[in-house]
Image: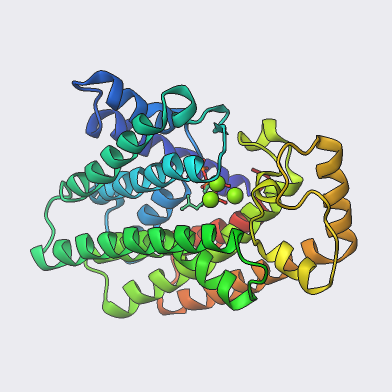
Length: 323
Ligand code: IPE
Ligand code: IPE
Ligand code: MG
Ligand code: MG
Ligand code: MG
């Protein structure tokens, strides 16, 4: 993990530096400050790192695609700002959520600004065959629509009694995994990867991206809020149909605080113990491991390289991370 840590840190630093340059705070400053509020708080930068590694893994120069990596990170931040409104979440990356620090109208606009800037910045990648650029813009647009579909399903499922595992997998593929898929696809397409490589990297991103969301659901229950930088137990309070809860519901397990606001930390701990005892946490973890294994198989189309091995390590990290 130490090598990965170092490699991720180096790439995250490149992304942060490029954001400073590509997304300056301009008039009206308050709007851009709201847009930069979470971006500047950091975050793991896993999606842009995946994009840079995808370019490298097909023999491209990752420096050439830095604006595309920034673009993917901005889309991610746009979805976080809007997601916190939808999920009634008050903190993110250890800071007040944008709609808390400003207001909902401000957060909607700050998110929309990042969303629009993401497309403009993507086109700043130079030296690309115009066909590949158009295809990449199209991929990003389709990805954003898919995220909206996934987020819609996520909220619709809150109101539903029963959600199947297949429905959950479709929802998380759309709300979360497609952006990892797009990182693999765009990073490799822009540097001239072959169709087979580009598709393999997209499939890899999508599969490990589903696993990533399962781990996010696990951490929502298990990780202290100070470590996570966002409220603990929020998924329970909101009545989210995570894979953990879907398994628990199918076993008839009673979680008294499910879909109830204002649970205490003791009640969240008790719910965690119940879900551990029912095997539901373990069930979700195992599903995530299988998805990562499948994802790694999709990298079979790539020649061996340092970048390929880092992508594999990154996928292990996505389900072993503690925040
Ligand atoms: C959180 O993503 C949102 C989800 C899709 C689950 P990350 O865990 O990658 O958030 P940051 O960027 O590191 O803050
Ligand atoms: C977020 O899923 C997915 C998107 C932002 C599109 P979550 O709602 O689980 O993310 P967190 O836990 O708030 O980061
Ligand atoms: Mg959400
Ligand atoms: Mg959320
Ligand atoms: Mg979550």
